[in-house]
Amino acid sequence: MATSSQDGQELVPLLDKDGVRLTVEDTLATVTLTNPEKRNAQSPALWRALAEAGRLVPGSVRVVVLRGEGKSFSAGLDRQMFTPEGIEGEPSFIDLARSGDAELDAAIAQFQEGFTWWRRSDVVSIAAVQGHAIGAGFQLALACDLRVVADDVQFAMRETSLGLVPDLTGTHPLVGLVGYARALEICATGRFVTAEEAVNTGLANLAVPLDQLDGAVQDLAAALLSAPRDAVIETKALLRGAQDRTYDEQRGAERAAQTRRLRDLAGAGD
Image 1 (cartoon, rainbow, N blue to C red):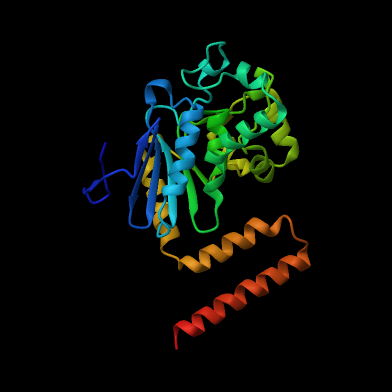
Image 2 (image 1 turned 90 degrees about the vertical axis):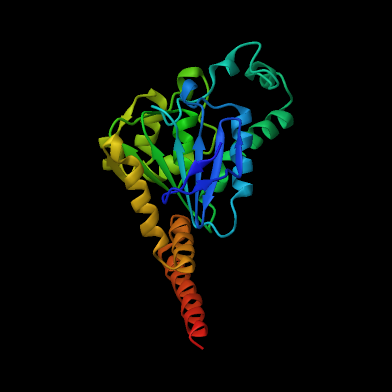
């Protein structure tokens, strides 16, 4: 299915399968969850498609937008995965539970691959989130660098209510954004987090009315694209590594990064 660019030109997807569509327009890529009838419920096939989308994003892309069609960004796991028969062609959770430790670990690691590439150093990723973002949907939004939310958004981490834990890479960014105590409370209770709380706690960068969500994301993407690419890459690496460095180590990292930028700029002027 072709989509239209901002100037009305037709964009042919690089990927369009299993509930995931990838389109690229110059330096901007858009990954869309395309199963609104099921509120973009997630499955192993969708996770594999997300991982494939990451591999297909061209090196020229600087910003990746993640969005979901319909009323919900993603309402979480497809509940068929919890039934004995599971999803056709996929192992059910019962099948996975009966596998050996190494096999089960490998299966979960493969599931996680669709969630890991959004924070890679050469792109900035933005999740445009409306309606429900529950469980795996919440974790997918957390996989991105930035989150712009509609005022109707409802985040929730429901894994613990199912006797599970969040295992799709969401725990690390959640603690980094809102702190350990609040992250524990959100995950252990499974309660909803509204747009106002998301912005106030740092979980979301911006909340806007639903009909302004696409425009707000486009404006943010344009602002990110207006800065020199290498400066954004170096700055992202500095900020990502800051929590793992001491103050003096961070000072050193800043000096090294600035040295690279100055030498690059001086060389560009020769």
